[in-house]
Length: 156
Ligand SMILES: Cc1cc2nc3c(=O)[nH]c(=O)nc-3n(C[C@H](O)[C@H](O)[C@H](O)COP(=O)(O)OP(=O)(O)OC[C@H]3O[C@@H](n4cnc5c(N)ncnc54)[C@H](O)[C@@H]3O)c2cc1C
Image (cartoon, rainbow, N blue to C red):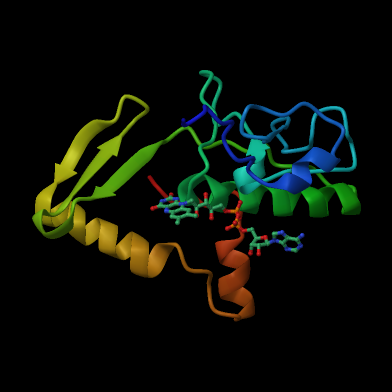
């Protein structure tokens, strides 16, 4: 007989941090992505339970959020070490783009997922996401720094 099981944690390593975690094992962080109660640890991407805005929304375990969280955490860890100002993580815009095979795709905006584009046009967008946007920049200094800018708005 099948039994109910707990979801797999975002990463088993988070259990080693003595801090509050959500049901997915993600660490609660402040707006600078510092783990609450553990000043020397920052969390990002799939392992951060991070507020995206002031409306009560939180990052999903998704590329969309992981990329911006990474930019912010990278900046803020360096700022912490160098004694400069952190830049709070903020990502109020939330979108989804769902591939539905040969028919096309569906693109939505907002946490209520209002459909903004569908069919072949949305499929073109999904193809760009999957073939260009999710890949890291080339190992070229200027391009890498530009891609790491925490103020870069990726989904406008
Ligand atoms: C099959 C699949 C499909 C997905 N599809 C989508 C999608 O369509 N759209 C979407 O938005 N999201 C999707 N996601 C989710 C998305 O991939 C993640 O949210 C995102 O990659 C998280 O980024 P991250 O940097 O936090 O972690 P990761 O991308 O997982 O990177 C973590 C890195 O840390 C390394 N690592 C782990 N442990 C250690 C260690 N002890 N020492 C050193 N390095 C270590 C890993 O090797 C890995 O390279 C998908 C995920 C999966 C698994």
